[in-house]
Image (cartoon, rainbow, N blue to C red; front, side, top):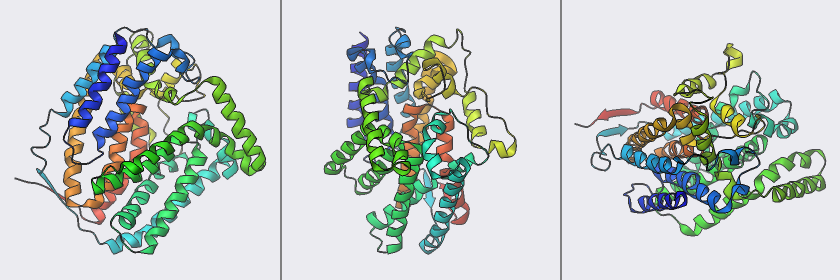
Length: 445
């Protein structure tokens, strides 16, 4: 019965995505649906068919929880219906002109600001690398810092400024390649942004970061031209597959390229691939943590673990501050640490709870349903604002995508602190634009 429900849910998600009216080819609900399908329909169905061997070794206690809470398939199914109910609470499509946006900005001013923005960005990158002990040390310890096994010192907060590069990357791509602005400086800035992406991918050991940065270029192109460009989508998906399949081994071995030479790098890379092959990890495995975390939270919360309610939202605001410099203590037991301890036993690798796991830790089954409804309501509000912003200024497509990605990717992650940290720089830039370029927002009567 559970398998049937997951198949039915997957069919509903796909059908809804295909038949619904869309202003953008790929919008925030598209991204939401992709992650929801993979995390809460495809992955659990695959686990039922393929067995617990599909669970990543990063979750040794995963099989202890998956399939041991009979209500889970029904709750997941109802959560998606509650999300749709929240999204359709406002009559989307009928009143999308009720806010009017007007931008006053001089593109010559933007071009003047760009070199200073890149200078600031690479300065923060230098501080980050220097704080850890140099480039080689940063690459060597990338996984330890990323997993939370090591904590950042005083200047770890500069990481919150790195998303500035995402805005710069997409903006100069939009101006040079989509609007066909002939200014060669824009091409130079685009190459600088690509360099920053490569550096950040290596020193943070993050395959997902690389995939999302490059996939964003495809999404911007598809939305701008209102064309999915399927001939480019297939190579994009193949590239994503290669990064997911071989990226972890590559990033674990890259340090040997700089310290011991190319042969050592090749040996380390092939050794890591052999380990992954012996462990039996597949691409499916990387999407199993949200459903397993949901079941773990449903079983443990309210018994030996107290409800978290929604205090993780408050903690998220504390974690974006430079805590060491301001003397602020980190919140005790962040949600991703609690979930990791339940499924792994020790915080060597972070196991993200996913959106439904987060809602479950907050309020058990009621939290899942209520949270899903509210998330759908937030989605339709953001959608209406996005359409009006784009109609007023096509360049806002850059902001529309980064916020859409944060909204949809939260399904896979479910950690408010990560979303707020990622969006921190986007919000800072948006506030700067409000004051520097006089963005006027008025209600249309």
